[in-house]
Length: 469
Image 1 (cartoon, rainbow, N blue to C red):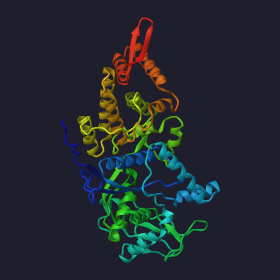
Image 2: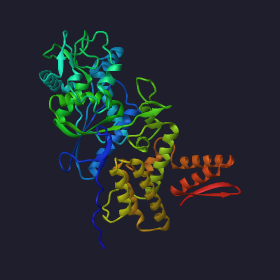
Image 3: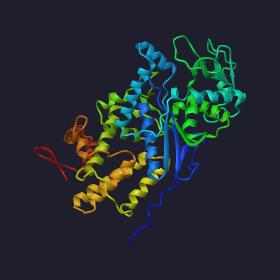
Image 4: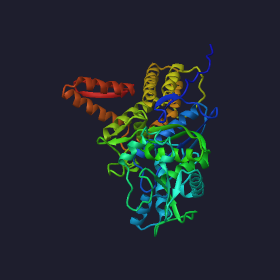
């Protein structure tokens, strides 16, 4: 008996602008254009940057699995106050500094299993577009030039300012001030073009030599790659204000529709505080990669819903490794090759997975489906069922949509320190400690975790032993 193809549930996302979950209806059927704010390349990427990378890579992968043609653009900020200061501190050119950190960012991205964006515009390669945009804002009365060569955006000229962040001009006014050396008319105004200072890089402009302000960069780069209207603008929640608010004011100020939807990933926290370079409480991706497989870090980053805060600890990364190990154990005896699978195979698993992912990319629920499917694969293997290899392939296929199970299982267990045998030994030690303190619920939970991974443990008078099922 044949079954109809699996009907995909409708896509829904949480739109930061409307502050609610809404249906995703792209501007063009079958196509999604996505712009994501990328890194300012003056240092190595930390785990907060990694979360944004992995979040939007996950979204792109899922949209493509649904048959959408996705154009994923992520910019690089390669001129900025922090970049200029860091290059001066190290006695090297800005180009040498930024190229080194761009290369490092690409290495981190690859290690985390992220596919490269389709376009990666750099700020220094889009100066002409920024000048055109600033000129258009001046013509429409949204900007003004001051003596000395600076150009500012006049925030009060744009009545919709604050719509993304939900802040009123009165609230913003209370905390705003004009810094020494600034010639702006209103404390709320922000710089579009900075006049050149001695020793700093600069470009010619109608207002004199200078360089762009940070906010104007993304308005120009999104327009140059995706046009004046596109589907989704994404980034970390820390960029929502003022960066994304200012982007809206700039782009709408010259008549661009700009982004239809806004998506933001939550903070990564360490010791209860937001991870940030400015606070000095960050851990770099490459430091973590010295100790952990990149796929384990990806699993950790997707273990919480992308909009929720994520608390980093070594214990949490260890739990992610245990979880990913359970999935790899389920497919360990099957070759890591793609084979055509009948559409009707595992319909309930496919449906549950897509229901979770269609609901604002609910990766924790989708990962729960993968664990259930792994248990089913282990059960079929234990029974010697001929369906086991096909169900294992289904597990690989669904997990692959999230960027998991991308390695040979043996390679995964051999990588980054301890292999499967050491993992089992560690779990048995934890169980023995739990039994010693008479925490039998914890001991039973460890036994269940091992059994789900296909490991049978046996307690005898001479001690505890284990075997693969």
